Image (cartoon, rainbow, N blue to C red; front, side, top):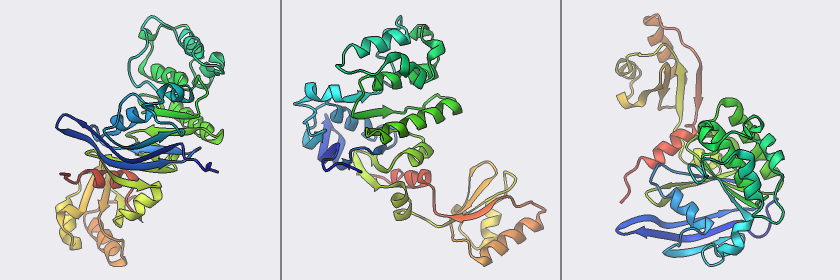
Length: 309
């Protein structure tokens, strides 16, 4: 259960870089013990938001409280309680994973065991490998371990599974869930919509510095849903001809992935009969067929594709 005091409270957050408004009145709350997703296209304002929450950048306007502290004015008190995942760079290339973890552990009063974390993130075989010789996936796992070495109450994870193979990705997801179950709060930035759906209890979507979506994945999908009909068939169907046969606009028949088709309409009996007949007349086999609301990925694309002033 969340505590009475949220881990993060943000109200009216704004930040400018010259004439560019990077953030424009962003407000959000992150409850203690939840995994919260911060989503947005590149340049949307995610990094600026996270840097302000971590105390590395000062807001121009708005109120920000992180673990009941002002991250800018009380950063020295805040930083021992947070973990930050380095996305790229930041480590001496001649250091080794175990050395890096031991060094970072020395900064904390009650650090985790570097040896244990090596096993947790699957880096035991690379513990003596120089950082400059590590693969991208290995470096990503080391960055995750470094974010956790201080047993933080609040962890900021930036694209934690970027470059990981499926097994390492699944292991990372499980580790995030374990952090949540142990009471830690996780703020996750990711471009992987399936990752956000699987891990995050709530999400904020930022575009052009403004909040354009906020809530649980289900709430966002429901609030921005467009009923649709999906089916699979051989790639390259004549979508214009299919749209005409079904009485749809050409833009309502899409092939977002090869062999996967989306009709942006509800699956009525008449629609299904018309689709089946059209495919039959062309001797085309109908694969999977189902009706559903749009996925989080499609909601994200819809919310962030609108022009903003």
